[in-house]
Image (cartoon, rainbow, N blue to C red; front, side):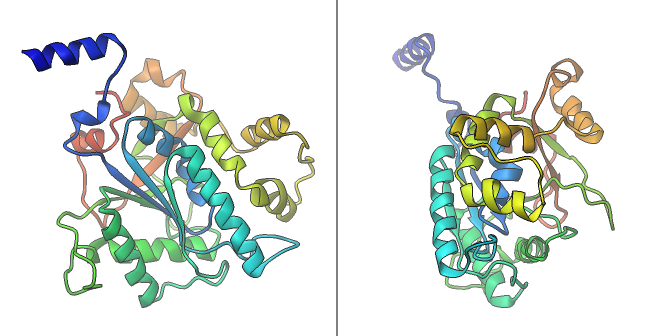
Length: 292
């Protein structure tokens, strides 16, 4: 009775602990090819998870040492690691950059074993990465590496120096717009409108990419602003778009038509066939920001 009274008083004072609804905090792992991929594709969802007391880790499989028009190699790699750490600080997540060369990634056995170990060490409930039909070879091979790890994370004799997972995580794909051989399917759609500015703020930490390299390689005629405030507004304009029809449909499935109609910013994910196949209730447990 006393504990119930204390809990009630805490609720009245505005103190609530949503993670207590779970047996333990969820462990979410997003694996991108480069040190800004996870921020672009999943930064808003990561922010929502951390707000609810769950743990998120971003891994970049390459060190990003080729992604610039004026610098490269170790100097650029160090800069991109520093930018990633700042982005992680802004999101409240762990950010790790692996030491593989940008633009030269292959789906080799040693890197597969490394990915298996990383998934096990994080004890991931959910793993999110690229799809294998993507424009960038590093994205494609990261997707293959993660797919190849999806079953092996539970096999004791593979990467035997790390304990196997007792349950295979749910593996998901980031959204993309590629149509061949098969288009992205929005199985899960997350309303990130409440944290869109946190996501943009985290992306802003990757200055070498969003304000230098990417505008240059895209021949973007729109000049990059000089001031911090203008840059944030410019980045938000460049990196957001209304939900596509199939994503809007997924939003309606999860949030209902009325609420979905007012959603401005969304991140969507497709369920990979190789990991645990979640039903509706399991998806809601793994994504507790979804309406109950």
